[in-house]
Length: 304
Image (cartoon, rainbow, N blue to C red; front, side):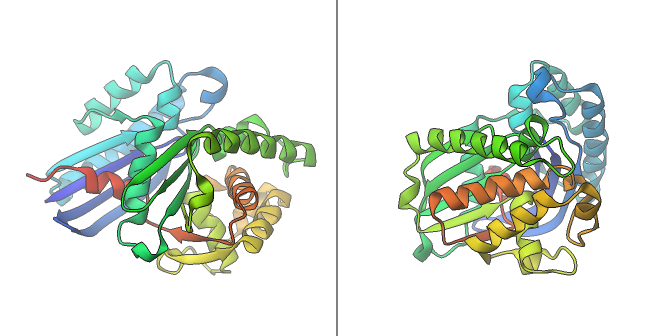
């Protein structure tokens, strides 16, 4: 059956159209648009009008793609920014009007389970237990499991949220970086209360902050998902790339050949989250996956 999965996060809204048949999935179309839906949510508690309009325009385009490709069933999942917003009913009404489906504002734990499903399906069980690290715009999920999720925790240390809270400088000051690191340390302590992270045999990193760090570490001349997928980035390289990004002014970050324009302002915070987690957890490396919550959403759509 041809399905469409839509992942509406704090920074971007993404679409996957795929043919799903039992245990097989054939991807037909993937697209991402940076809409920064979570602009200012950490401070105001509401989705900004201009952010809602950017999201509406992206969804109008996705609706036309789905119609053109003959999608039969769709599922849209909204995550951290929408969970936190007082005016999420306005967002839901807009989505219904554009896509014709009800957006599911999922809990942090359900977001974690979908990320785990998307990231680990197809990985060799020899690498289990897996610790999936999903760094989003508003939140980060850490999920431990083998065939199924054993434990998960979602914490509010996404790349957009930390940038808005702390990393105002261009580049950020040492004090700003330390303040952001302190937030990650507090969040990791919350994770450790429920997730036995030290049991992990393989750390799997997903989403745009992680894949961009991998592309830089690999020295790619352009963003190449096939080269990035299932690459292993040693801890030392994760730390080095994070230091470089946090020391660069915006103009230098924008000039990196692998950098998506919508990540320029927030990649420093995303890289910082990854580097601090790798360091504090004593991880030797990170297995980077291009498959993530978007794939988990597609797999979750029930077949007739």
